[in-house]
Image (cartoon, rainbow, N blue to C red; front, side, top):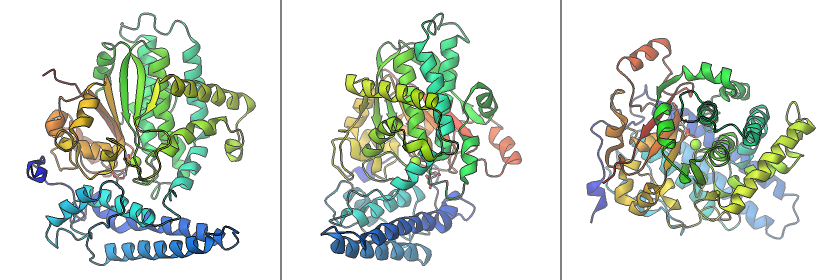
Length: 477
Ligand code: F6P
Ligand code: MG
């Protein structure tokens, strides 16, 4: 079967940088060059260290580093000077033919960076960056974005401590579940606080920090009921009441989280997961799905997952934060991390791939997340994954890119029902998307909402300030 023939075609065009008003265009001319330049700068620092290294491989590694810098610089040049997306070389890692097969169907004009469909081009870019590393001997396990992930985690200490203390005290309470079925119950309120923290955790992804200052981080990391009530006004579609009603029907179920960013966002994912497992009767197991290669700067790879938990037990890590944590705060982080390690040991928390999967490692279903495919095509190109996720009580899709893929990054009229935009994926699983808006595509809004917010804030689709929470239930077939 030629699967390409059967891929879902949204009835509206997908975004591309051809439209100079679109975020795709800003990304092409500003964000991608800046992201690539940051990688060059990281590599340049790393190679500099090699001059004083006594490692027997340092000369070879240095030479490879130099070639990698040249390749990345050429890529920046091509993007800005009418270049094309060229076929990927075979680096013996997954997801080469999916990109090359699609590219081979395009005209030379469609293959230009300035004309290519944005979703494809951006996924291709991160696969292409991976190739710069995977084709080397000494750099294939190097994550060029790790230092950035580490820095933002450290600078999120205030929100990290707040959430640790809030959750630890919920876990200790014996009365939290009393009367949980009634409207406004303590358990419902606690759930809303935890899931909204998880939503706003997505506002702080590092690919956007190209435009955002660190000082803005704190404001975006809304924690506490009061801050969240304020932030809730910015949720343009809010299906949380439906999600809560659905959760209450579950007993000892599995929840899956299709992860987005490492650091603080991952921390909020773990907080929500721990809340569901430790404080409710609904969920016994949470499966986290990471990316297999460095992706969209800050996305979680397997190493980031264990690191984020282990580092909470390393008192020196946050000591350079400003202000540094108090002993009581450190203790609350240790209690939390110890509980999470217990969840990993008992199987209440699981990574969908082995914890020690190396970058670029091949796993049965884990590679799908770093293909270019819209999730509307998941039933066709990854049926086993759909079958697996269909067994889950709830699949939480985190972040902007997952949302773009769920609805194919198309220019849907904003009032299009979410289920319509999901195409063939709708009904195959219970899914909720928690997304802060960082790209033009959007659907599921009530009549008049888009016009109203557009009149107040021209950047509402892309600034990360607004959000949508969209739920789609599984249909029993
Ligand atoms: O570069 C485009 C983009 O996909 C934006 O949509 C978004 O800003 C970012 O990259 C990824 O966001 P997230 O980490 O929320 O998926
Ligand atoms: Mg991301």
